[in-house]
Image 1 (spheres, rainbow, N blue to C red):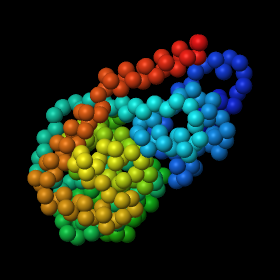
Image 2 (image 1 turned 60 degrees about the vertical axis):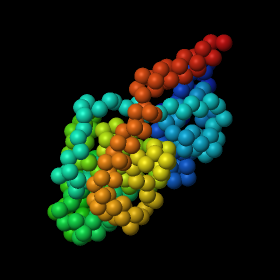
Image 3 (image 1 turned 180 degrees about the vertical axis):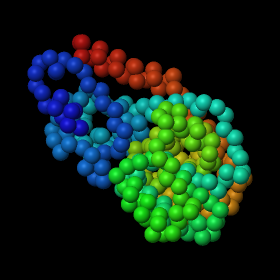
Image 4 (image 1 turned 120 degrees about the vertical axis):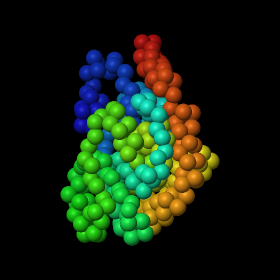
Length: 277
């Protein structure tokens, strides 16, 4: 943020001639305001164009950050799955969560719900992938809730293709975030035919909703809804197969890598040509 502001507030003529296209990966809103430099709104309209990864982020750029320039809607760039992913029933009670370990990711609520899940399904296990400032707090919370035997902190994984190895280990993944754009991990897991439970924040409802029947959408900050959604899925293996296939169909329809790359190149070309005129 500081680097962007430093660039935008510089009035030297050589900088004015360089077009700027920014990509917004979160959703500008009241609950994300602390992620932005306070003076950003003063300079934001010096940016020539924005790329938003979902409709909710596009609205936030325009309405919350007061940007009046061109905003292009382009989905995430995703690496293609490296293999086919089966649906092995013996892994059904092994749940994954890929997340930065920080307060806005809602892991506290997941752990609170998991206490009840463990009581009902003692053989179920929760595997958390990631690290962050909240890690020590979350590990202490696991001890306090007496769920340490069923919760595993797996740490970080290899970038780019580490997701493939994780997807092979679990059929169900949960994203309990309090705010988001669309988490990349959700899309990567949909591409690998995994079952997704996610909170209705940011643009998540653009890929997981009743129309697509591509996952389970819940309200953020609700341990009860996390618990109920997990129990419902554990109780219906056949229904989960439908969610899995529908999730993959959404990925195939919306996230064609070649089309997305061509869209981004076209945006840069358009902005650069405009500057030359």
